[in-house]
Amino acid sequence: MVTVYILINCTAGKTLSAAKKVAKIKGVKEAAAITGPYDIIVKAEAADLKDLGEFVIEQIQAVEGVERTMTCVAV
Image (cartoon, rainbow, N blue to C red):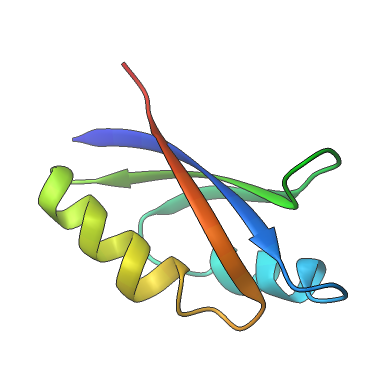
């Protein structure tokens, strides 16, 4: 199991709605709107790095309002 933190930049005005949508995605353990250079931080789990890549591209980046993501793998 791979634990990751995903930092998300959103379209202006879409942060709260995007955070709520992301929080409902299977594999997401926590999602919170934050202050600073990123708008949302997500804690998630994936079976392996291949599943992680698919998860980020197909699930997280598909949410309306998500512009960019940075994935940080916990070690």
